[in-house]
Length: 240
Image 1: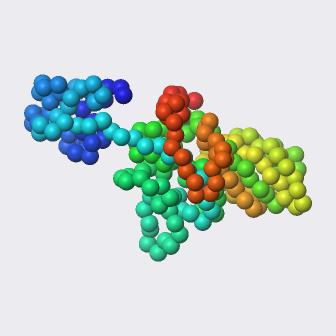
Image 2 (image 1 turned 90 degrees about the vertical axis):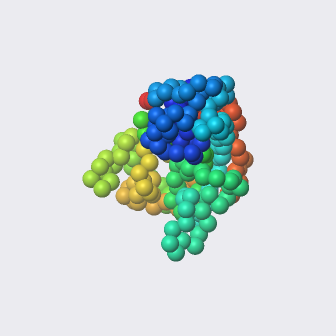
């Protein structure tokens, strides 16, 4: 664990907001290794003892889950008024708050990350870090090569052109085509809207990969924890 500013560590411990934590430091209520702390001080809870009002902070216990979201499950942590469908948060037996990383429409399925590591969640959701997402998309009909090329180059949705994407045919069967779509962008219902605009409505959509994390043998509703190596690899990703 790297050194962090004391106000961030206090905030992560749930004692006070960062601004309120600064007041605690000014009031002389925070110590590091027995010495009175000053604003701007940093510490590493794996090796330093930080106390607030004489009580030591504990290193944060981060959790990282990879979930296969089934269809008709809502990508949300909190139940909205009149929402009767299950929430992804209800599928993970974890006490405490979890951020949902990588939303999926209720009628779509596939990989979603859940974690209580807010910093990593922000990195994964921000497009500047260039995390790709891979989807298997069943569409009606057989798109022509020029149609697929238009999708790859971007189409205009709500007055804004979509970012370039990788699109290739995996399988054709009957009156449907299975496509693989790889993209960095993630507007609401983007794949469904693009497919409909190009004349090939989506029949089924599964997110099978987030960056290097793959769906593997997970079935709808199943989940697993990320390995320490996977977490390190995610955190090592740099801005694109």
